[in-house]
Length: 436
Image (cartoon, rainbow, N blue to C red; front, side, top):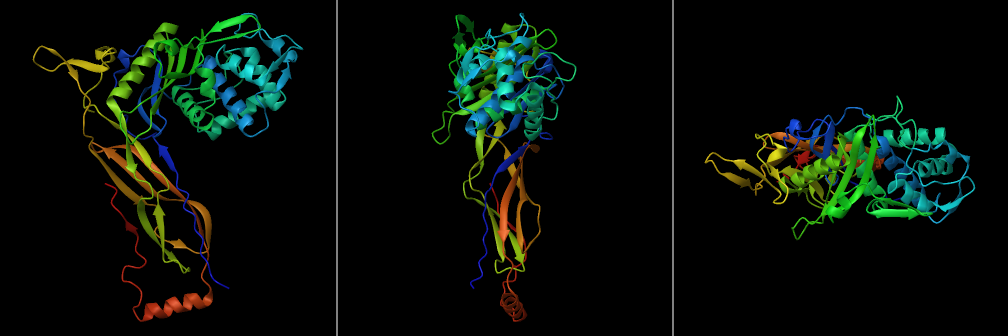
C-alpha cells in the first residue's frame, strides 16, 4: 500500500496587539471623552487608545451583541429574517421612558423589522423579543451573550441584560466594544445594512438615527450609539474609505468613544479620531500570498521538511507620523485632514504624512522539529513586526498539520542512506526565509 503523507496548510493571522506599541501618540487631555480606542480591523492593530480597558456602562452599545447573535442565527439557518413573530408578554417589561418600538403583546412583526428597530431605533422591546425568540428566555440569552463575549476575547465585559440597562454587573470597555465591532463587520456584515440607515419608522412611530455622522460623512456606515446617565454618551463608529492605492481594497476603521458629554460631542470626537487615523496611518502587505516563511524538519516520516507558507496576504498597519511627537488633537484641522504646527519659523504649517515607514520583521520558529505521526493545529511560527524598533504587531501563523508516520521499511531505508552520507548535510535544520 502506498505510503502517503497528507498535510494541509490553512494559515491564518491572529494579531495580538495587547503588548504592542500604539501607532499614534495622542495626548488624552485633548480628547473630550472618558475612554476611547481606534482599531484597524484588517490588521487587528490598535492605532491609539486611552482608558480602553476600563470597565464602563456600555448603554445601548450592548445591542451590538444582540444583533451579532441574531445575525449569526440567521446565517446558521436557525432564524429567518422574514419570519413573523408574535410579541409575547416580555415586551411589558420595557418601561415607558425606555427607547422602544411600542410593541404590544400579541402584535406580529418580522425579524427584519426587529433588527431595524434594535439597531436604528435602539428599541429595548426589540432586544428582549429577539432574546426570547433565540434562547427561550432573557436569562438564557444573557448567558449566550457572555459566552459569545468570551469567545471574542472580550475580557473586560460582563452582560446582565440585552437592552443595555444600567446594572451593577453590566459593563464593557472601549477595547472590547471595538473587538465586537470588528466581529460585526467581518463575520456578520449584514449588520451594516441596518446601521447605515438614517431613519426608520414602524407602526406610525418615526425615529431619526442618533448617529449624526451618517448624514455628514458618506463613508460612515455604523455602528451604534448609546446613552444613559451612568454611561454618558457613547458611540461605536465605523467607516470605509478608498486607499488611493491600485492594489489595495477600501480600508475600514473602527472608533469607540465612551463617556462624552453630549451626542454632538461624541460624534465630533469619534470623527476627529477617525480622520486622524486615516490621514496618518496606512495598511501594508507584510507577508505576500503563498510566501515561504520557514521549513521545519520532520522525523519518523518520509516527509523530511514541512513548509510553512502563507495562504493569504497578511496586512499590518503602520504609522505615518513621527512617533516621538505627542499629538494635540486641537492641532488637527478637520477640513484639511492635517495636523497644523509651528515648526519653528513662526508660521503654521501642515504636517504631511510620512512617505516611507521603517519596518522590519523577525521570524520566530516555535517548533524545532515535527515528529510523526502528527494531526493537530499548531502555532509553528510567529512573525514580529517592528516599526522604528518598536513592536507594533505579532502575527501567529497556525498550520493544520497532518503527517503520517513512515513504516518500518521506509525508516530503515533512510537510516541506511544516512550511514552512507546520502542525506544532505543540512537535513534536520530549521530554515527561515527573509520577509523584507
